[in-house]
Structures are given as C-alpha cells and as structure tokens.
Image (cartoon, rainbow, N blue to C red; front, side, top):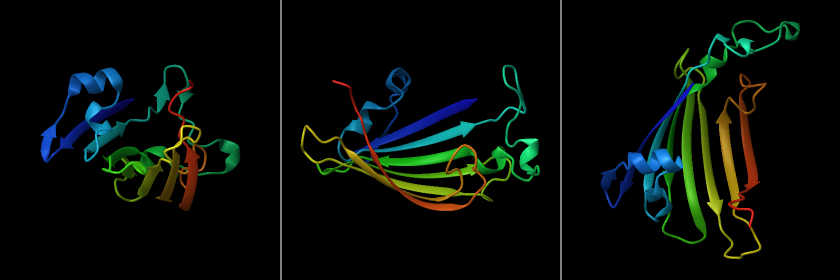
Length: 157
C-alpha cells in the first residue's frame, strides 16, 4: 500500500493544488522555474498479501535471517524537488528514505540533477548519487555508494 502527500512553494507562498496533483500525479507548479515541491511517500509492506501470500524478503535457501526485513530499510521517504531558473538544468531532487520498522537506523540519501542540451536530438541526461540502502529489489539490505547516469525519455513522438 502506498500514499503520497505533497506541498508546493512558488515565490515564497505555499500552494497545494490537490485536484491537479490527483489528476496528473504531479503538480503543474513543479514545471515552473523557481518552484519547490516536498513529497512524503509512505509504504506499508503486507506480511501476507491476498494474491502473493507470504512476504518475499528472502528465500529460505539463501540462509538469510529475519534481520533483513524490508520494512526496516524502506517505507518512509521525503523528497525535495526544485526547478532551477536555468535552461541547462531542468530538475533537481534530494530524497531521504528509511524504514518504518526501525526508523532512521537504515537511511538512504539520493541526489539527482537533470541536464538539458538544448538540442532536439538529445534527450535530457540525469546524473545521480545515492548512498545507503535500497540499491535494488533483491539486495535492499546492502549498504552502497552509487553514481549513475540515465537518459530521460519524456515522449515517444
């Protein structure tokens, strides 16, 4: 189960257009330069799902203990997004993620920036740095420092 709550600022004034966020899953204010958005993401991991059955934090043959429960590493997140007033950088975000089972014991920090090349043939380039846990679905309990590059595809025109 997942819930998201957002608050948005423009020109020092807090605004929260809930109807537009619900329709687009994103605030239209976040597309304007100089805007900030803060989003809280809350997830709850079921112990026994109606379709899946028991939680699959690990398999018995992997010899893992109950010490690696996903809810200790994930479930609570806070993200700060910013649209800089420049054409070269179109988006910046900083996020903090931790578990609700043991809050703040296993923390993950992530910073990302999206760069534009002002060229219709080149898609935006995202460069990100992450330190902490949750680097992938399987090894969420391993601590990592990761630098990544991604291409942002905004449409298939």
